[in-house]
Image 1 (cartoon, rainbow, N blue to C red):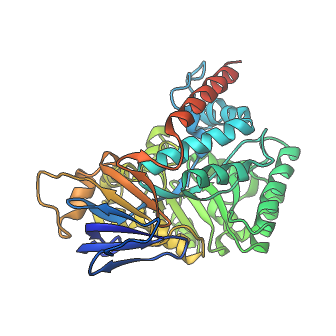
Image 2 (image 1 turned 180 degrees about the vertical axis):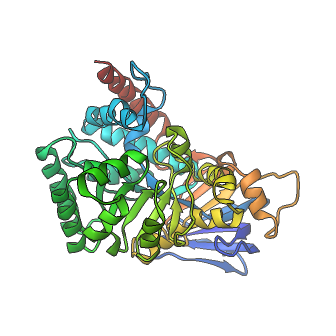
Length: 425
């Protein structure tokens, strides 16, 4: 079964080269994408032909760091007292929220996130989940919700010592069971300052055993460095280096704002990746990301604020102009580096047959020479017309095809109301 894109203007996601013609998109993890001289006169049963005249076709987007569990937080009542700093925001907002999640709310949060991803042309997500009081089955619920919508996901369960030994052991077991079953998964940790030496050792051993990596926040705020140094006598990345975290090619360190030159050198000399989340950093007032002294293994995420990677890229560019003299080409490369991470680490579901069709009626000419200018100053998720994931059409004419949007949103709104009531108690 194939999908044909008629009269397509294809933008190569690596070179930005424009090519025009008819495209055939094959399905499955190994499905390809190729130009064909003519459309079949008699398409096979199940084949589809989409007219892409005056539209741009390019690789769909992927998110290098997300928190699907935060989906039902949007619009929730604020805490009784405004958090004084980042640590209080964690304690009074996010840790309160993740403890309030039950199995149904975990599922609904994942469905809501996957639905928004699909609408925004995001067909793969690296997710960092947390639900201390609903651990068992949480990874399968997240993965199942994303699969239902048609969006790929590489999940993990955030482990820490902040909720006690019993929760920690459940989290290790949940992660280990998924890895033992051969399901794609990373070993998630919250951050150095909430992870003791025993848990860190166990997490690295588990990741090493199953040839996966660690997914952990690193130096997001100065509190991470301060508490790590006071408790362990070293800085965050130094601690991870000594523990073997940086030796795992699937490892993702998230944020990386408050790093000294030594830590930057350690990261640059390692195989680990780093996920930038500019908008979250601005929202939390923790600083600006700087790529100085780091390798090119930097990708973009949303940190759970939203599911729009075009928006994330634009924020990284404008926020980085002053902080690190960011160039459009460099930020666009970071947006696309998540594809390299997934490919190099053998994670399926993010192949060349993942595409977004953009209906972008620009008032000025668009070409490969000026595409980046249009991308950062003109394009937006409102221009996402149709989305193809693993060769399968999951959004057509801005309508999600795989699930009933109205029914899903009715469930998530009811779930959000129940969650907010629980948080107010």
